[in-house]
Image (cartoon, rainbow, N blue to C red):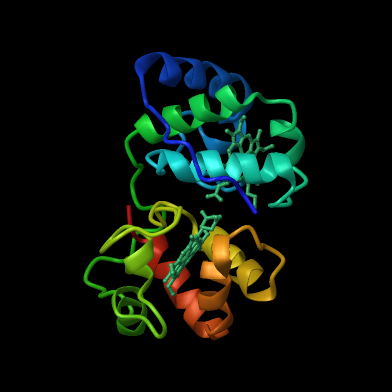
Length: 188
Ligand code: HEC
Ligand code: HEC
């Protein structure tokens, strides 16, 4: 479907060009330092290959979103690499939804994240290992995370190579989606 990803080389020039484009075109929704906003997912500290792939998926219509598609439509491939290099260079923001002090994370969410029903989330999403171009999940709002999981489960979002994420999401109950969304939103 998609050609193999080129490695993003995060040289200072690329980061600088990405910062300029981002300040003018992205910060109003994604935050000045790329941290979580109510309107849009956090991008600070996201893996560069993820940001590049998502931008290219929007551009090619593999991932559909009425806001993002026109924004990236006319961007060059170099612009997408520069934006990815810039966001990957930023430090991750704090956990957006801090759990009350003294509370422990939901045991079922921890089990699913670290051991899984089919495969643990952590085996693909970076905590234990990283597979495909799986994004880092910490730092996003629970609303965004749950919406993306439901979109994979229903197939509205179908840009994951080999259905890696759709196969996981289809086997999740609604309660599991909500508890995992809260679990990751409480992480950096
Ligand atoms: C008008 C607000 C707005 C602007 C401006 C905007 N975005 Fe977005 N962006 C969004 C929203 C909303 C989403 C989530 C779409 C969804 O729910 O799938 C998103 C999603 C993304 C994603 C996918 C994140 C993920 O983990 O799946 C990337 C990457 C991204 N935007 C990068 C950018 C870049 C780079 C720019 C500037 C060139 C930009 N955005 C400008 C609102 C915006
Ligand atoms: C086999 C590997 C794999 C496993 C296991 C897996 N994922 Fe994913 N996931 C992916 C990949 C790959 C993507 C990115 C798809 C794309 O956009 O190309 C993804 C995307 C996501 C997204 C969207 C994030 C964003 O910013 O757009 C969420 C949320 C998510 N996964 C949650 C989970 C949760 C929770 C679990 C555990 C129940 C899990 N995933 C297990 C591979 C996996």
